[in-house]
Length: 470
Image 1 (cartoon, rainbow, N blue to C red):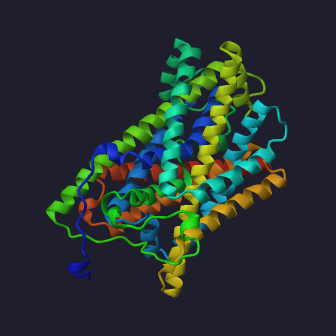
Image 2: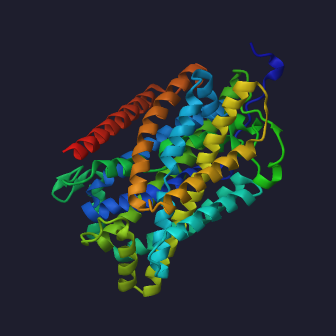
Image 3: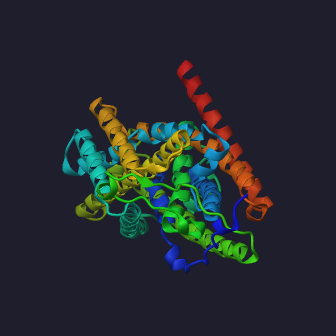
């Protein structure tokens, strides 16, 4: 039983404009995988009839993310803390699945290849290695990791997306936008929903990355407490590497409790409305807009070109054709913007995945020795550099083809999503008071999402196995 003296008041909500932040990061995490690479790749090869997948995928992720935020808002702790209370082995799963799913450096390889094409360099792996090390240094020297991430993300989104929107408007035709509208309803040229010849693994990868994907969705709960939303106001923050690298800090990963008073429940509901709106506007609307614009730009410039299916050649083709139709320097600028967006996505992924693994490692360490004196910053940066080292090794072994790395990682992450959607929904019903449970319609939506990812993952894996056998 919790002593009344341990209760904290549920904070009152802050203005909506001050809430903007976490959704930018989770949105940006998908820019380099689904938005910039996979969905445009599909549209350049199969047309815009597959746009419904992007719409459904990002809508699914909106509901997934909100259930993750629900827990953090009420508990003031990440979902990993809650899941560790219910399943002692959960931490091991999240460390393993996160490292495997996102350790494959496909996104930074894509960034390096695009920039190499601009510079006229054939072997891009050395640029990719340099990029990985640069990301490690950026994260290591950031005074406050979260603030650094948010500032970089907002700048790139507000500069990059409008530039691409302008290009899409200039280079597309009315019939292209009509095809996009039909594609959102699943109507393509001579097909409905899925065209003949489409690779299921690539489509599932794009679907899983219509947003962030994999365990990255779970970092919403960490960013909620980092920003101090709801009961996260009382949580600790991760500081920069060289500020506390030699210090062992008293870590309180568990959140604070509050009484189920009318005032506290009212404050939760007010917070819930605001973060729901924030996530709808930033993550869902801007995310869908970004995917659609990048798809229509790829379609209107490169659809049907013979070398599109090879790697990420369609991106390089976009830059060349934009330069031919407008001015050469504009095509070059487009490729530079794409390279920067991909770089920023990899930076965000390394930050988010390292947070996931560091917190789960700390949970098991506390559980094992009972001591809360832990250098969480040191653990965090150990995982940052471990992933960088893994990526460098793969590049040195010439495992560097961007799209194959991205697709492989995305399929693994689709399976991880199936797992965490089920676990988070179960946890919310086990650990949250009933007054904070989702309504029946939302519960039904989550069950549908859970079954969809499970079924689609199983079909894709089975299809991949059969294709190798036969």
